[in-house]
Length: 339
Image (tube, rainbow, N blue to C red; front, side, top):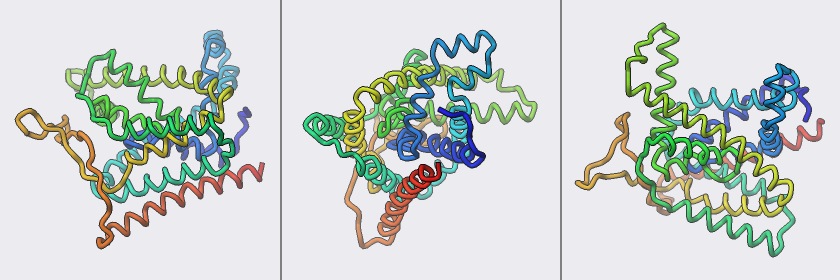
């Protein structure tokens, strides 16, 4: 892989990182889909695979330039930079629109996932007995995950570490939403809302010269949870990339068939027309997180009412999401032709 990249390539890598970060924050949407349709999924996986024993030897010997080149450093650093910026900017904007215009946001993502199914499937001409079976298995798993009920929140550090390993699968496997898995594990609010907000508040205070957070036990505990979760995510990202690079190399057609089936089965997760069901206590009272928001238990899906204006607006956003994916496809083809 070449480390030579134009300024426009670097800019678009940061943008793609922003999109991956935002997608990873939304339950039901996978950052891996962004990598897949953006045409850099395999480079992403193979670059992560380079973070191995040889890379650490180069690092320990002080051969930083060789280390940077070996792990495809400019690619990974720009992409990860975009993801980190996204968590403190785009994802917050996304949170706002999910609260104010939830139907339209889910409609846009639904259209994008439809577009990703088209994007992945349009050039896949390897349907036979084994790939059809693999696709059906992926479909069944995707549908099953869509209707699972979430568990209770758990702040045990070992469990948090495992959450990190499992949740990062959304970045490495298109169609598998890491944030939705965290909902199922009961720790979405703790790890992707409370912890991120705690880090954001802490950095803001440090920037102002305020270190009072060091005496706040709840804040320190939340930051410790975030550190363990981040460590688990890093471990999961590297280990899963090794597994996936092997699978892509030896079973590419079967893997692609599973991904197509899985993404199709996961459409139920992002179905725009749904009513939120909130968690309640044994006494029937709603359960809230530390920010005063009701904790989601699951969704009750329904068919849209075509007599409502908002339904047609939602359909517009479905089409818009689909067109965005077609635009990425067009950009990828144009870029290949210019190389």
